[in-house]
Length: 209
Image (cartoon, rainbow, N blue to C red):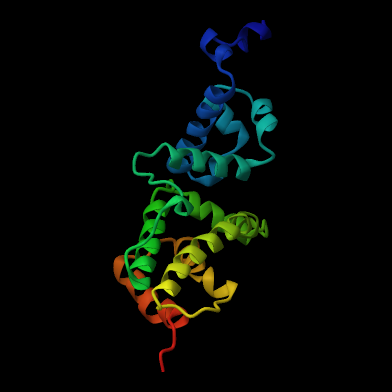
């Protein structure tokens, strides 16, 4: 009988809430890394996670929402994850060293993204999905808070000028995202130092002439 064919095992029937979501996250990441984002469909994820598509539709509107949430969960479970940038106390004694530390910290976090995720984001953006607008827009306030803290310390030390616009403040984050999303790779140490010395410091430092 059909009912017997679709009957769930006791283990499957007991999965609820976070346990079920974790299984779905792992299934989505596994498909993303091993088969590519084209294969991350609700049907394939449901099959991998041993659940049904209706369950996925209950939690997520589309595949992007699922992948994005799964990636965030996956990163948070990685032992190399050092936390969010906004929670870090960056104070190396100089504006230059603070900027290098900030960019290096972001680089290390970006390296934790699963294989295929950045390609997926780039593809979605090319299809007019406004992925960057929706995701970057959400982090803009925290980006500003991070830079305002960093620049405030530099101003106290007499390094940075007083009036710095919003576009200049978010430039380190924009450049990091540019390398990751458009070039498909993170900045190495040499590129980070060049960005700090040749682009950021000339914008932020106080003119002593």
